[in-house]
Image 1: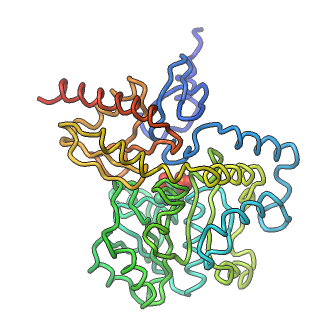
Image 2 (image 1 turned 120 degrees about the vertical axis):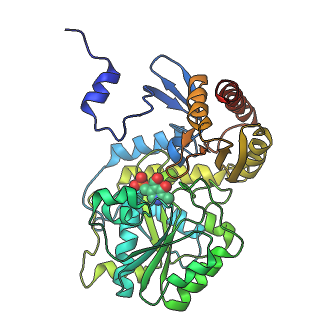
Image 3 (image 1 turned 135 degrees about the vertical axis):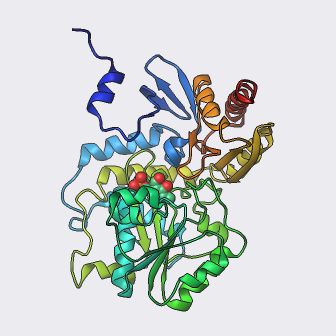
Length: 402
Ligand SMILES: Cc1ncc(COP(=O)(O)O)c(C=O)c1O
């Protein structure tokens, strides 16, 4: 019997999330590159959706992982044993934040962080109404999924959580929907999956003020905007708006799965009583992922990686001039390239892929492609990668204009 290819085995044995997976057969990844099993090299311009900000397999992250793995891995569920990798991470990260964000709950994924934040908001306020922005993605678990505004999608999974309302991002009149029944508003400071929608001036502050007025908590989801992606360690620092809770994940672990909920200690302590063990996790704060996160943050903050983000953004924006580009929206190296016609999108993405440049779609924007390269690209590397993108656009324009 003929042997199945690895691709066929993958399609047979692994749960699929769509009928159109990218099917890049990964052999290895290093720095800004991913190599497939034929030895073809791809410029990673997505960072695995805003994860690999310091590049793939960073030597300091590998070293931290191997050192910690040989000392100890899991010893007990989160919150019982004193583990130095967790403390080291908290000691490195928390001083970089406002003094009100002084306590971290270490978790496994962005969705779990959002779940935990939703629970803490209900516990803290005694209210159950939660408000999120239309066209936001906060995760795929049932609680975080309930925040999605796209009813055509979520209706397949009913019943989801009751008490969820939506506001339109940047629509100040909608802030009236936030009331004394609202436990919390959860929002991204820059909407990622809607196709990089920046907050209008004063919007986030108006949101903060409205939350204060009615006693609702403000939860900022910086799972995608965090760790230097926008040119500051966190986007809320750029907009000078403080959340009651900050959700982090993705780039945090340098390629390892980890997330964190950050808040004031008094707020977080609510998980310890009435009931105790208000939120628990087996693997949250895993020592190996914490060691990876510490090494990642060390790399990000020790050098000038974040300082260079805006210069790289400017360079990319200058290069991305093309008849089929309608608009480029960006905050640092979180970018959306909107095309003049929807039909160009899939061709540009697939032509870029053929040429060895990985760009991707957004969940809620069918005219724009995502550019979120690792922050460590050199200018020369950016030049070469942009050449490929522009070639893909030339070809798409030539072949598919009619
Ligand atoms: C803004 C935002 N929040 C939450 C999540 C969910 O994170 P995870 O996929 O790690 O569960 C994502 C994932 O894309 C995200 O972009």
